[in-house]
Length: 225
Ligand SMILES: [Fe+2]
Image (cartoon, rainbow, N blue to C red; front, side):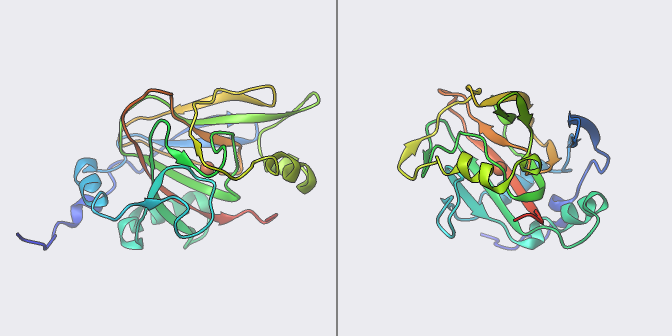
């Protein structure tokens, strides 16, 4: 066995020029297709890190499992996105989301949430159905896309209803309160960059039997929090 890995090219970015899409009137989403030069090799290395339940190290409503990923694995990504963030370092948390249909969660985490982070990069390292869905929250006749237009009291009243427990993740397409206006599909080696304060959740269709695997970098705390 040769434990030495001497090929730095697995970390290289292939496409530095995103396409910008409008998420809604107040927010864009950046899409980098074919993001890494060697996504298969990068994924192989990433998958060597140990896996923990999402809330193993600190409280989070995130379902499923995750790996904590060290800085050296995303230096170039952080630098590239600094052009859009405006300051560096901006990554506060770096991990993989390892999701599956009916995965365990400590609350009804299929209900949309916000990250309290302004900058989120999600790099798909899988294929499959579903993706990241974006929602508005309905109050009377007003639709709210993000935390920005809601008071702290209202936000608390929305999310206080989340009860702790042992649940299995469910597919979610919306209900009386939440309207799904956009679904960003899983595309292998595509990175998406968006403001985590826009309400969103992972759409994992029931019965889809493969792993939803992505690298997530997030940072830039919302000044309101
Ligand atoms: Fe999130």
